[in-house]
Image (cartoon, rainbow, N blue to C red; front, side):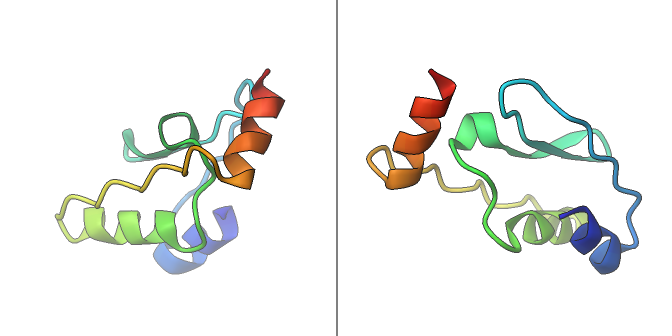
Amino acid sequence: MAASLKSHFSAQVKLTPGRSGQFDVLVDGRLVFSKASVGRFPLEGEVEQAVTALKAGKEPPPPPRAAKNSPLSRLFGKLGS
């Protein structure tokens, strides 16, 4: 993802390990994506679309939450236990 953001936006990207599988994306101090609040990792291109919207002065659309009964949500639930 860091390489994609750098190539799309010539952005300085800093990856900082979080705790407990935390995955947050901040742009200019603003939270663009949070795995904790959506229950999943970002889809391909999802973060780039949010950054594009911010750069255009628009509000990025809220990311859809993971389905409660999806295989991924069950896996993340087991990993978080």
